[in-house]
Amino acid sequence: MNLLILGSGGREHALAWKLSQSLLEPKIYVAPGNTGTAEVAENIDINPDDFRSIKKICISKKIEMLVVGPEDPLVKGIYDFFKEDNDLKHIMVIGPSKAAAQLEGSKSFAKAFMQRHNIPTAGYREFDVSSFSDGIVYIKQHALPIVLKADGLAAGKGVLICNNHIEALGEFELMIHQSKFGEAGEKVVVEEFLSGTEVSVFVLTDGKNYVLLPEAKDYKRIGEKDTGLNTGGMGAISPVPSVGGQFMQKIIDRVITPTIKGIQDEDLLYQGFIFIGIIKVNDEPLVIEYNCRMGDPETEAVLLRVKNDLVQLFIDTASGTLHEHQIDIDERAAATIVAVSGGYPGHFEKDKFVDLGYMESPDFMKYNERDGGVVIFHGGTKFDGSDIISSGGRVLAVSALADNLTEAIELSKEVLSHIYFEDMYYRRDIGYEFIK
Ligand code: AMP
Ligand code: GLY
Image 1 (cartoon, helix red, strand yellow):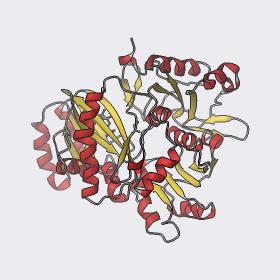
Image 2 (cartoon, rainbow, N blue to C red; image 1 turned 90 degrees about the vertical axis):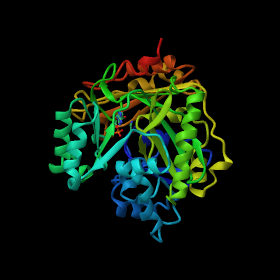
Image 3 (cartoon, helix red, strand yellow; image 1 turned 180 degrees about the vertical axis):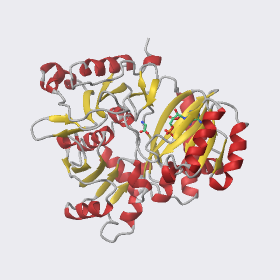
Image 4 (cartoon, rainbow, N blue to C red; image 1 turned 30 degrees about the vertical axis):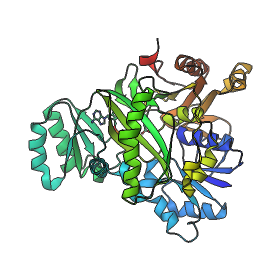
């Protein structure tokens, strides 16, 4: 089977790594990929949003399955582009249709979907330029903190948690009248602030059936103890100790089951991952967001615990037969810690030599003689002809699987202590709430 993965981060390296272990022995291409994906697949230098070039590659490489890593091409309708094209429609696409991807692409769509299907979420109202003055009145009387969300995709920056009314009114004005987030902010969801512990759950659905993947928690802030600016994600753990069997059952009953039923009832074509962000409030799960793809860096932890053949799971996803398979999860714990360029998420320098010499050492090899072990996923790297150099903010994600979380985290940190690039930074406290 010839398979093309779209994307270039740690998530896509983890997908390529896992898919490359399939007994179905796929030939894997990644567009555009990175130096890590080049170890397990062939990179093709095209942009995931360039549908015409993707079409050409799919024809010339006889691609049979397309796996879409990031949300952008999904929200722009890559699924529909394939299914409406006579040369492409036979290709299995792992990712939802444009209409279904609105669950991530429009906060307003997602909130209305949750209301229609009685899925618990924070109370909200939405406003645009025509209801601006109502929005001002609403915000002025709203309890603090207030959460403002740009309706559309804003590269992870569209959610603002405001601690006073002046700030909230200012941001609201910037979004609606000054196009702070461009078109994405033309509509604003004003939402109640939820206080509680967060967990991310992941399902793979064929539109009717689904399998539940291991849950994860990601650490979004740049600084230790969750301080400083938000990032794309500095690390993740799985399982999440605060999610026991009982709470997971509540998530299944109140959130996952009605979500899948809602997708079916509304005839939304969905064959792919749903990543549901949840906050646990008074032991109840409330949804804060849907994403129509896997998380990064959550994927780099979660996939270490999935024992199934991922190519087979994807074939079942595309053919509507996911009910024929059980998900097989490793009971052990996985952790991933992200090494970022100094200065990220603000200004940072690229093109730093990334010294991964440790990977050749007997010490490193010994980790991988164990079942599980350590995997170094690349996020922002490229090959300059002779060396691996950094090419983005999140450079590497070092993932480890071990008997418990403490050991997985320690193993990941141990390996990170032997990796070097100038100004490399990583959080030493990933999983801190759960470690004795
Ligand atoms: P998002 O950009 O949708 O991933 O949201 C970013 C982060 O904002 C989430 O991971 C939460 O930590 C936080 N967040 C979003 N909505 C709320 C809410 N209603 N209450 C508290 N925190 C929230
Ligand atoms: N780590 C959060 C995300 O992928 O959206």
